Length: 200
Image 1 (spheres, rainbow, N blue to C red):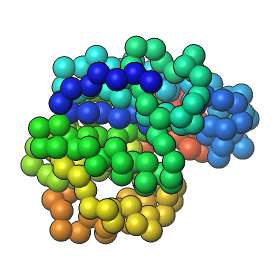
Image 2 (cartoon, rainbow, N blue to C red; image 1 turned 90 degrees about the vertical axis):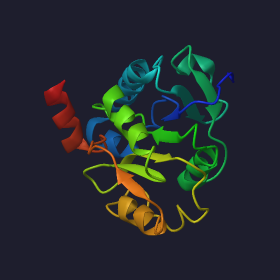
Image 3 (cartoon, rainbow, N blue to C red; image 1 turned 135 degrees about the vertical axis):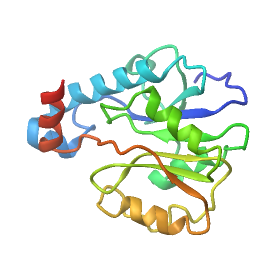
Image 4 (spheres, rainbow, N blue to C red; image 1 turned 45 degrees about the vertical axis):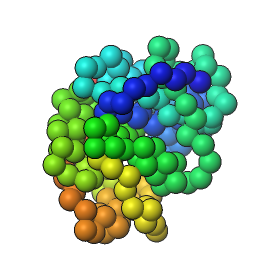
């Protein structure tokens, strides 16, 4: 586990260990475990490479499982385990670190188009908003950021990995100043994978 982050905007890259049969399982049903693993590994490495060493934020790799071998992860990036709990609980603990001079944003590792300008615009929104969400075309979101610790109810009853994920989170954020970042898509199924292959 690597430390050493100072008070500064914090970008957290959520990542699952690239192990065959455990990643992109819905996609793997369409294209096979080997191709799904290769996509996951490639996207994780490319995303980490684009988002690291930026003057506007510190990058933290939040990994699961917590004890996955170091050799599985991109090197030279601060890293810690996501810990126990469902997705909302794990993200909530990280967002609770947010402060006005050090907002926190979390992104996934399966958004091939994600690049530095998308993150920079999200952090710009956090200057004037309490919460920022980056919508995805499937009804979820690729980014969530906070300028201060969000309410504990933010992820209550959110229907994860569904067309309702963004709407449920927005409903729980009632009363907060919420900004929406750019629309980007993750790759979860054969259609998204074919679209990515065509662009690549």
